[in-house]
Length: 246
Ligand SMILES: [Zn+2]
Image 1: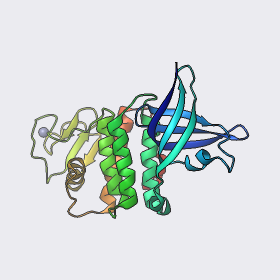
Image 2: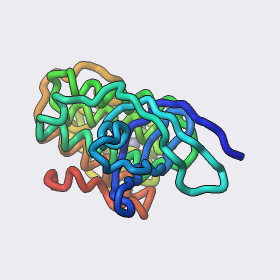
Image 3: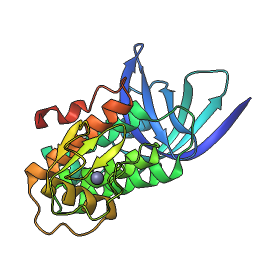
């Protein structure tokens, strides 16, 4: 069956194809992740070829045929191309981390509207907010984990059930969950969480205001989430855009 699909998309990747065309990977609002060809997309006269660039948020028209792996992109208009974000190295780095997560960890042709809207929102915040991009990305990462079915459990100690965990150094076992200061002594911890790091991650999760922000803690939180995700998805090789953090 073939059909015309009109939807919104975030551009994840663009590669040259043949002498004149491009192949793009898109995360679309209504059809999930898909690959499409822009015929003649490298010609300077191709309007679609010019605006379909990584990170851009677009309104697109796809000529879709289920029997084909590669769909045809037949129309595109810019919703936002995030010019300020692209001029700032840190913002760009963390925005590419968003793109990488979508590219590596979303299923093809599976619609996920909330994740799409959350991803557009985070790119818009990277563009307009004065908050540190590591903080903006940290909030996104915790949201992303929840949306793909790997929510981090932080409410209560997974052994004794204790809930008031703030203010003490804790352990984390990626399989079981969080370990309180007592239970971490005789249970295997795969990651240790300082009181400061724990409080920060709780703030990310609840979107509470961060009282005292420091970049080192923000980066540690991202590394923790990345390790957690690698544990659960062994094929996931980590976020290349953020390799400088390690
Ligand atoms: Zn405990």
